[in-house]
Length: 413
Ligand code: NIG
Ligand code: FE
Image 1 (tube, rainbow, N blue to C red):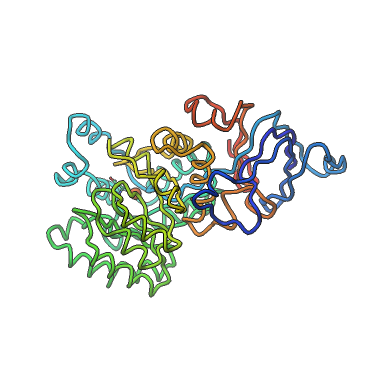
Image 2 (cartoon, rainbow, N blue to C red):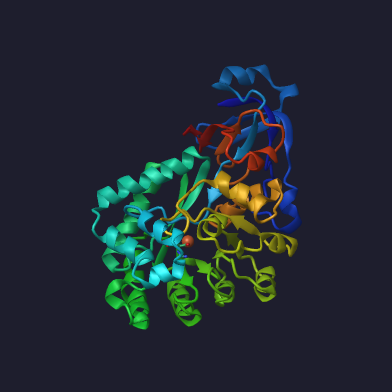
């Protein structure tokens, strides 16, 4: 395919770029008045100025006219929980009536509520509901996504979830990375016996997940009221033996020590970070762990927003992701995440775009192939209607400016 008349093409990075940190986040190259061609294998073939378009190109490709729209990379949503059964709109009412996320969890709602529903839902039905969410995300511009387990909480149900995630990976053109999150909550049968649950996770769940090769990464909800730093350390140490790098939930509810333990284990990312002091920023400055922030959860739960501005100013690699899940962020809309990054976290439109694309890719180990526009990388991109500026996109955050979405060369919307 040959895409003509692109007014601006964003995130046209150099071939060696696999992430953007600190000041580089607002400085990714922008090309004006260009064409872009894609190859049959779903990658970008070439990009060049309209003024020097070789007419022979027109004959060799299916031609699409961008009509003066912008092209940005498809979003890379590095933190989702889209495999779940049913919804939790009952708890939505509890929240409206004033209960906090922790109070709902303590009453047996929250994650355990989703685990009960998942247990009662056959695998095919779980797949049907979940793949629909992946398709919805792609239609809204997402070209790569991470999917976590963590609503199973027994060996059988964690495997069921991970198999469904693997089926989604086969069913959609988007790149999918899968994370084992057995330590999302203590399963019902182990309530009050958290350390025995962790023992079981290490002895039974991890080997079973590894034997089927179902997970790329491992996650732990390391936070007040959930798993401790010591338990996290044990789980990450055990997972490393199966080659699973960590991507962990940290510092959503308290300064939990999650950032430190994650960085100690060379986590690909530490995620949430609503509670973050200078010490956490300092630790992140000295490693390559991506600081992933989830403004949709802050929006939905009325929590503070993670300090993205401070983190970028400190030179960190900041990613933004949706956290799409039934309890704290029932939306996988990355353009909303982009807008929240600007409106609530005070990132510039360019910084927030880098956070939603190449840095999200880096947080999934895909920084070399996804999240930016350059020859050889994924032909995953969003074409906009003509817009006055990049800033217009997160500014006019409900205007339907997306005209087409391509994921690895395939038109999905
Ligand atoms: O990322 N914080 C932990 N896990 C999810 C919420 C899961 C749920 O409530 O179902 C999150 O916010
Ligand atoms: Fe999450």
